[in-house]
Each structure stands twice: as structure tokens, then as C-alpha cells.
Amino acid sequence: MGAEEFAHVVRMEDINMRFGNVQALQDISFAVGRNEIVGLIGDNGAGKSTLIKIMTGVLKPTSGKLFVRDRGVNWRNFSVRKAHEFKFETVYQEKSLGEKQPLWRNFFVGRQITNRFGFIDVKRQKQIADEILKRQIGFRGAGISADSPVSSLSGGERQGVAIGRAMYSIPI
Image (cartoon, rainbow, N blue to C red; front, side, top):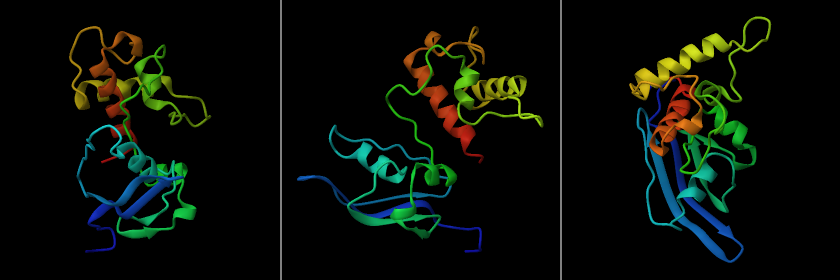
């Protein structure tokens, strides 16, 4: 492999997590390869959310190893901010969108596109949001545009917007 090549975007080995006397995760290993999209499914209480929170810097495990692009990462230096720098994005099952806000605002919350004067480039953000809605998510229905409020969408459409937001955040 060359300098820019790696086998795994993220790899976690022997992850253990305890909350007091409760063993939430025990010896879990998990890897996501290059160009791979992963859905994590399982029973309630299986530890899915805990594992994702560890991978995205929300929680620090009791023990285990983390590798990003095949390089070891020190847990002490790992945080939500660092996970975002590594381009880790998560689409949660729960609500994660601003209900009363238009779709374009939801795509760019915290990541606004600004012009050379530092003002938010609303026109560009709407243009990109419309492109994501039509080309990446596949919204073809009349009445759904970048200006549509989240509250007008079905549950599945909302998840599509959350996935589109995550995809936009990670240039492929």
C-alpha cells in the first residue's frame, strides 16, 4: 500500500465498556473498510449505540484500541471534534433535524458556506441542497425542495435528509 492507501477507514479492537458494574461491551472488534458503507443492527441493549458513541468520540472505552486509516489513535486525544476531523458521520435513528427549519438549513447547520466577506452564501447552500435532494437522495416528488420545512416530510424522507447531510459532509 502507498502513503495514501489504507485497508480500513476505522478499526476497533477488543473494545470493552463498563458503566459501574454493568459490562456494556466485551471484547468487541469492528472494522469499516475503504469505500464501505455499514449499517449496524441488533437487538435492543446489544451495545450498538455505545459502540457508535465510542467510535465518534462521545464516550471513551474502558479498554481497547482504535485505528483510523490503519494508524493507532490515543484515546486521550480522541474527541467528537477529532472524529469530525476524521470525517466520521453518524445518522441516528432518533430525531436529528430542525423540524421548523427548511431542508437547506439542516444540511449546513454548523458547516455554513460563506462568501469572501464571511456572510452565509444562502443561494449556494440552497443550490447544493437541491442537488443532494434530487441526485443523491432521489427525491423526485413535487413539492419537496430545499425550501421545504422538515415538518412536511415523512419519517423515511427525514432519514433520507439526515443521510444526505452525512454524505455531503464526507466528500467521496
